[in-house]
Length: 319
Image (cartoon, rainbow, N blue to C red; front, side, top):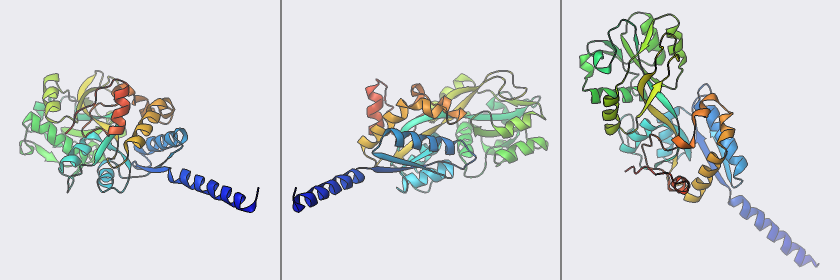
């Protein structure tokens, strides 16, 4: 083999490696704070996809959860994110708290429900959503997803903020006001069990407000990001019955600019290795293929839709 042949083969090898390197697609997933559920799940997803799809290099990044993550997706600053489906709906419509409309948010998969907790105390006289008129009610912090959800809930119930003694409080301040005897009703939207509510239940006769089936049908018809669910009996001390309540869905979303091929491979690897994700966090056990399209509030990415269609699943038609 002469010198020119050796150099030629070396160059071909170099070009081959360069081609392989250029074929790698790098994806970052925005999650939440290190103390939350999004962070470990995002890390688990990144590791599973990177291990099973060599041409995809996926990393997980800490984030500020739904609204911040949607701003990153909407402005093409990150490829994927974990968000709530209600926030995705508002972002797609350019509704508060978003200052502009983001029409590039696409669903890869629905993950698990985050439940509306309508908290009250036994003896308050509040048993149904319609009973909160005239009560002292915490509706969520300004600009929060909780406030957005509660606004939708009250809109369907035809209850105005002015018909209540309304306060705008976050999770911890809501439960603290109950402890101080300053609230009759408080809304929290989170996966159960929620630590601040568990803490309240250890010192007070906690109760949760039921949402009847007819009301939830109206709610879901108007705001399709809600799903019907229950908070099981015994989740919180003193609440010994199943509590029917709306829930929103934690979703994995992506930028519409990602190719169909990339998202197809990602989605396929995600579901074919879902048992590995179940080992990462207790909440991950609720992530199942059967609920992969529950509560979808923005369009499914065509690459993900291709995978679901191959399994005979109906793809939601979201405009």
